[in-house]
Length: 274
DNA sequence: CTGTTCTCCTGTGGGC
DNA sequence: TGCCCACAGGAGAACA
Figure 1 (cartoon, rainbow, N blue to C red):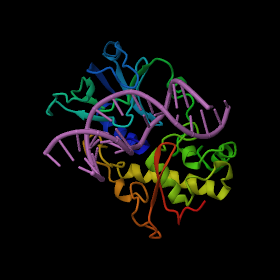
Figure 2 (cartoon, rainbow, N blue to C red):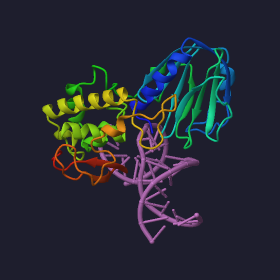
Figure 3 (tube, rainbow, N blue to C red):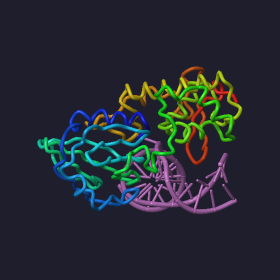
Figure 4 (cartoon, protein in one colour):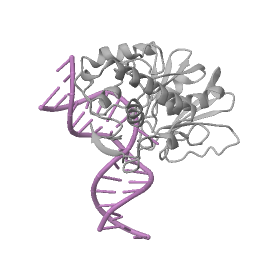
């Protein structure tokens, strides 16, 4: 499910209810996430205050009194804020609830259990899961010179490259195809062949597509829902993803689909030459 | 070190 | 309608 825009959409949805609030109770119904949930989590979090909810890559960071709670949504994870007037009966895949003193309840749901709920005392940027991450795509340090420098040292296909979180975080399978289309670059292009003007276009395309997707509340292909249960509206703006066989919105040529590093890649062979 | 493939898990959609 | 298979938006681990 969630790439960066969907995680950011979730963050913006829950933050107003939960920031500067104290945790009353934590309920873990299923510990079997990507990594087992720390059995001591309820005791650790009880009576701590959530100061701020941030985001690094696709991780949500709950800044607490004595450490940070990391939540990753994996492929099928979802967060909602319930209040006491809503039904609280947990569903089959409602694995974790965090109840706050103000009455709101953060509910983590994840059918595939590829997500994670992790507690850490150390500064988050030093955590092994975060310490090797590349720049945020929407920040200024992600620019064409940076991308070109990294690209010159690699021999992978450009789509695989921009999906590598050590290069830049937050670009998942949907937005990788979209950004390459927008930049007019073939997904199989070897990164070391990237030219400066292409790097410029690609950086701008990544920033633009992610920014627009956040503004639209994310992309809902099947099951993404924001914290209030609403779908994102970026799916209707997708140019190539999920459009195999349909006419390119720019030139009319049929969009093609192939598998690249075990993932679906969509592109327009007319607009994206090698 | 780089690059590729495998794997975790459940749900769903398409083909027959 | 039911059954089976392929595939799904992530990303670390294992392997070549």
